[in-house]
Amino acid sequence: MKPKSFAGMRCSIAGALELIGDRWTLLVIRDLLLGFRRYDDLRANTDIPAATLAARLKHLVEHGIVERVRYQEHPPRDEYRLTPKGRDLWKVSVALREWGDRWDATGFGAPSIEMVDRETGRPLVLALVDTETGVAIPPDRAQLRPGPGAGDSTSRLLDERTGAGR
Amino acid sequence: MKPKSFAGMRCSIAGALELIGDRWTLLVIRDLLLGFRRYDDLRANTDIPAATLAARLKHLVEHGIVERVRYQEHPPRDEYRLTPKGRDLWKVSVALREWGDRWDATGFGAPSIEMVDRETGRPLVLALVDTETGVAIPPDRAQLRPGPGAGDSTSRLLDERTGAGR
DNA sequence: CGACTAAGTTCAATCATTGAAGTAATGAAG
DNA sequence: CTTCATTACTTCAATGATTGAACTTAGTCG
Image (cartoon, rainbow over all chains, first blue to last red; front, top):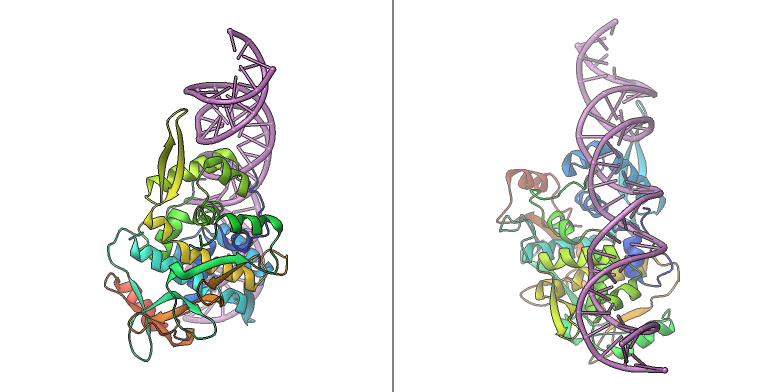
């Protein structure tokens, strides 16, 4: 049957997954983040079926995550680029890579890519940071609380589970 | 047809998506991170079809992300808990929430949950941090380079696209 | 002309997802 | 002691998304 929609769930995670939460989309976005732009390159690098790639790109364009840009007129050819909204998915991509590396999701035993500070060469990881001071905070000090758009059910849920921030 | 496997892709992101990259799994993990444990609670909170939830939980247990724990004998009842491997997905969950909030993926206009420092009450966000110093580094200073498990194709790809770290 | 490239579309087969309904084990209520 | 309620599923047929293979389109190159 038709996949059920996550619309109306009042949850940003559900909202995000509604847009990018299928088997292929984040793999395509990974490649776009790496700088791939052309249809055939995306296809060759991910081994995604042609029809599936076309459907995903169309969907991503419709939702402002990717834009289609004409790069030559004769013959007419378009390429695909991430919009700011799409580029902003880099944290999701990094988080997935870190998890995959730590738990050896590939089965190859060693990470094939590392992220380092261009200036110092030292490794970088995602961490929770105080927005005011820029200082990293240990995850167990994180706490979830209702935001401005919280409904009653969310508030109740968080009351019952205070501090289940991770 | 049968979904194509991402196994053998030598990419941690593909490896991660192979395990958790479908429409429902991360939504279930979100709830487990929030502290939900029982089958019926997961079902009620996500509105996931019963058969789909059962299939996902089975898959997650098989891959060591969730464990099934007997919580009473009469009648025999099991609940589901995240393993350390599963709990370690919190960054993915936070990254999706941040993206969904920033781009209003729900359409409700305001985030329903905020993450704050339990001690100072100030907002927390994910950021890249130097593993040695704990200092946050701006994303444009990040650079990807081949890791110990990199094959020739990965090295070549990164040579061509140096600095496409995001 | 004929081969080639880039970016798709079309198609039938097959598989996963879905809603509805049913099952199993037990305790509680009348 | 019979029926209802709870929890955690399983089974089923219908539907439609995903797939590989083949085809199309619009042009360039020699």
